[in-house]
Length: 166
Ligand code: ZN
Image (cartoon, rainbow, N blue to C red; front, side, top):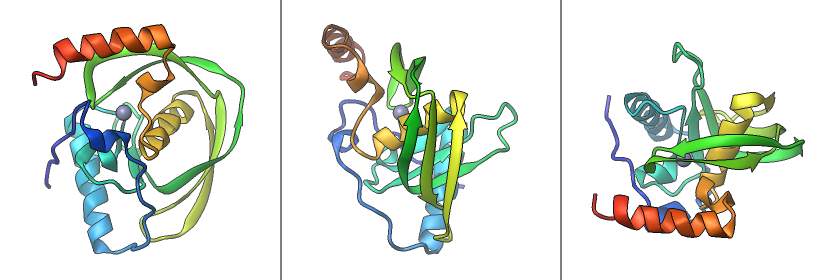
């Protein structure tokens, strides 16, 4: 098990559009395992590859209490969305900051598994929110980018004081 270093805002890799994965090989499997272990060690419910410095469309999620429902998303795409729901979020790349944004209530995604097989998944509630948060990461979007302009300014000031000295 290898724990990976989590990149912290404003690391520029967090703003990049990640590349599609085309090799579904043992290196990818090892990366997924390491990402999952890193996410659990950090007490997170989702982790996207750009957060560990790899700009590829890969994310792991586990919203279960018992940490035994691992979900791996490779090249995920939202293909359908409906409704709106308030969501209070945090992010492993923005430690100690939480704020409220809006998310779609229900989504359907298409993704590949670690072997390259395509699957679809429809969800609502926390899983749908978490998937939107992680898929955003793969497009260089952070949850704070969904804040109103004023709140984003406040966040930027907060982050200068609290994150840039880490
Ligand atoms: Zn995040």
